Length: 156
Image (cartoon, rainbow, N blue to C red; front, top):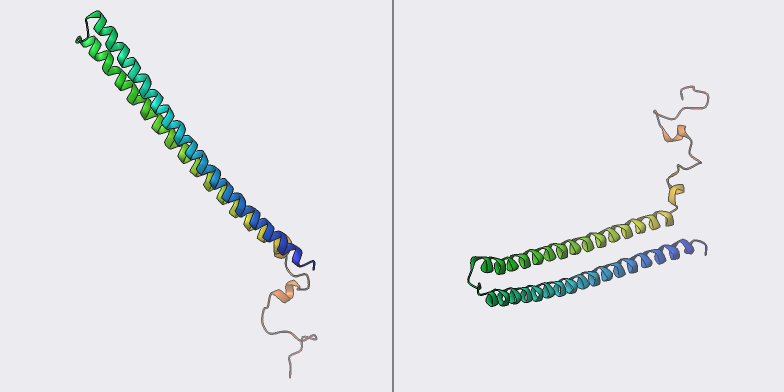
């Protein structure tokens, strides 16, 4: 009966580790989905804000009678450039978040593999299984030729 306990604990450790890895992957996937939704919302908000600024700049320039001037055209064009910069930054941040999630997930997987290895190692006896057999002597482990007779006389 005592021999079955290490097996049961090793199986429980493996099952727990596998369940942990599964949940970590699920969490990483949900985190990526959350980041994607936040990025989309941020982009829409930036586009709305740029459209409002463009409309205000156009209305102001038209009210002043300078709608076709180079200053008004440059200012309105600048708003589009700023929007492009904001969207590019948003895309970079989203990509980095995905890479971070992926690396975290891989790290968790490798950690779980390591834990499985240690669980198996401990189930097989741990460090005590690596120690040499106490019954063996150094002389028995090393053979330099045919066995000697106790009185060192040749057989004959």
